[in-house]
Length: 135
Image (cartoon, rainbow, N blue to C red; front, top):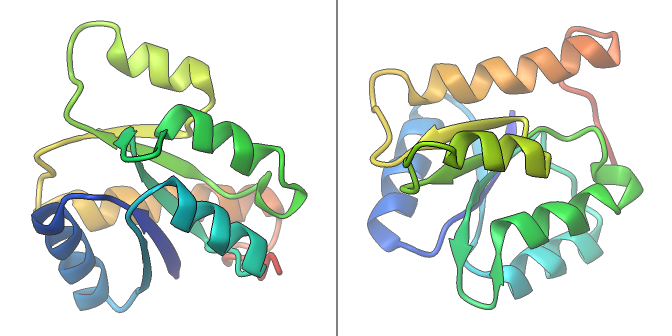
């Protein structure tokens, strides 16, 4: 599975990337809105996007809207990863169009399985049971 990890905090980057790579997944990193936009323009499409909600240069909700407006990304699951865990935050992010919300600090015991679940649910909706090549 190809994962685009959008995270500006170095410790959070390392933890998420290490967990995902240990499970055999390829991880591309973007640390701000400009890098996400560059990756979208480059044409590579991941199987799932993990999006920090608070980023330098753009917020995750704005970037989500930009991804959804790009035809290649319309079917890609985008998961909000946030420390914003107050009552109503999950609903706000789901209403903004995220496919799921994971809270920080991430649970190292369940993180990879949760990410895989959302990627596989989307792949099943695509009809082939495997993550599709969305290039």
